[in-house]
Image (cartoon, rainbow, N blue to C red):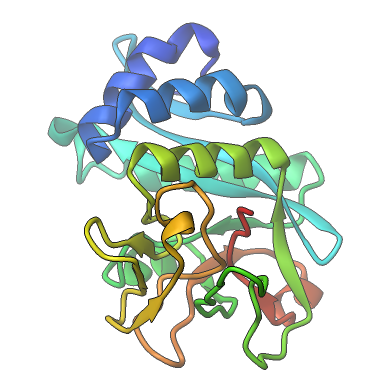
Amino acid sequence: MIEFASINDKKELSSLWQMTFLEDSQVIEYFFDKVFQDTVTPVVKIDGEIVSALFLLPCNIGGYNGKCVYCAMTKYPHRGKGYMKELLDFSYEYCKENDFDFLFLVPAETSLFDYYEKCGFIKFGTGRVYTIDNTIPAEREKLFYDCEIQFKHTIEDYWKNACVVYDGKITDFGLVFDDEETFIRNAKGSFDKIPEQYKKSGTIIKGDINFGEDYIPAMIKTDNKEIKNKICYIGITLE
């Protein structure tokens, strides 16, 4: 039932992605052009039709290599049948069999933490939102952490492209440029003024889905105790 998709499945995966997240076709096209070749893409097929899928992006935490779950999606008529849990379990087994140390994800909303916990994930990481101005680069808050999650440049370029397409909006890691004001807003609702030149340039700043001061932005599944005990900064720098 579970198999790996290839570029030949692009049309079907693109359609599922667009239906699930209402994504702009330009963003999806850029992903398949620049990022897909670096991903592992397990899918559930029923009668030859892809009904559930996710992308596994390469990433690194403190020198350990793993996979990041991206765009977990299931067709509406097939939801509630356990297909996504099957994909997540399969993905973790894939990681272990191929000497990857962890499986990582950022829940899109707080309600999903309970679901992913049932799939064996634990809360992980820390993060904040940072501002930039004309002369000073992004300055981190005085926040202790051991390491940061790292992605390939092609993946960061893809997120930057998405930022441009959506007039400066990035939602995966909780950053949203306001459409009509030169402000950046975190999910908690606070505002920090940023220069006009950065508003729609595709330049964004480090951030997370920040629902509170002690909010944990991500989840991880791993048997590696050292990774579990690391304080990892969760965010993306696109400059």
